[in-house]
Image (cartoon, rainbow, N blue to C red; front, side, top):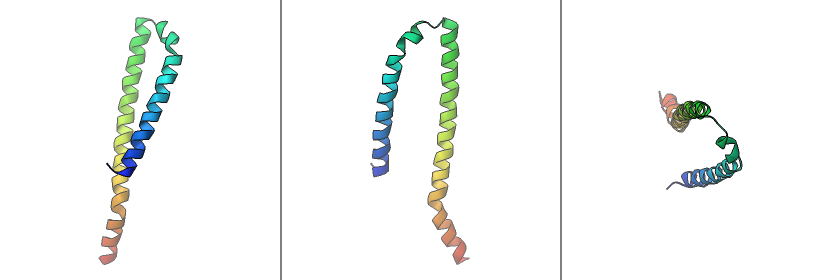
Length: 79
């Protein structure tokens, strides 16, 4: 596993633990939601998940572009 992947994995684990703690602190709020509000919340979460996946794809694409930039620059200089 690459070092950057290890750092991200540790960061994600810490972030998840923090989020779980925050969720546990707000558990009473969720108990008071109506079924309609729960459905709305689930829909909002799905939308947010899709947005995050799209952003992640863009970030990965940008990272690949940045990694290829020196190669493209070198090829341009040779032309």
